[in-house]
Every structure is written in C-alpha cells, then in structure tokens.
Length: 138
Image (cartoon, rainbow, N blue to C red; front, side, top):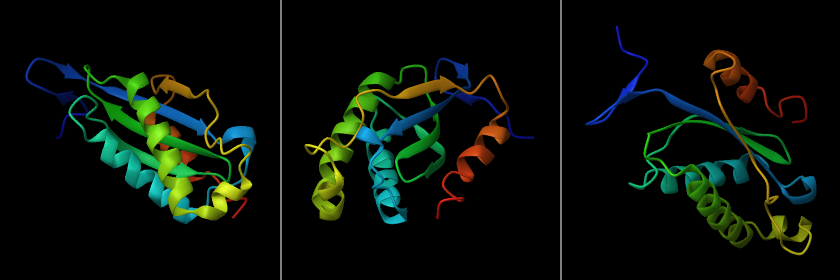
C-alpha cells in the first residue's frame, strides 16, 4: 500500500493546498485554451527548486482558477504565487491578444488570492469540486 505522505531527506509531510486566483474585476477571459496555458506556466514555475509544487487538480471558471497542489516544507508559497501571477499575466496577454482587450488597464489578476490547507474536508471532496468548476457555464 502506498503511503499518502510525502518525504524528503529530513521529513515526512502532507502539505496540500487549495488556491483560488481571480481575474481583476471578474472579467470573463478564461477558456480552455487559456486555462491550459495557465497550467503549463504553473507547472514550469512550480518545478523550480525553491518551490517544488505538484498539481493535484487544476480547473477554471470564466473568471477564476482553482488549483489543488502539494508542497514541501521549504516551499515559499507567497513568493511562488507572486511569481506565478506576474509571469502568467505577462505571457497570457502576449499569447492571447483578445484577453488583453477585455481587461481594465491591462490588469490581469486581482491583487488578492485565496489559499487554504485542505484539512477541513477530504481531498476527494475538493477534487470533485474543482473538477466541476465551470461545467454549468460551458
């Protein structure tokens, strides 16, 4: 039986998070293509040594992202989120000019974000919730 815990050289841990990022003024700019690019950018930045994050689930509605991910004890989450928001904003606006047209003063992400550990409910409940994001609106 595989353990649910992660390990590194010095510790055993289970650090799972639910991150919600919202488009500035809730502009409806995320479709499947944009979401796929946002995921690609997330995976690239998350793989760097100072973060070492792994996606569990990644999905979207038209105006926000839901991301479930695992982290390591040394992961610098606030630095990661800032790096991700900055890079993804720049790259999405460059690759998808139509998105840029819908934004207000070119601001892509809201300055705030939601981040919570997943200890309050089971991971399966959260995973199903994220999988269902946007299905009623597509």
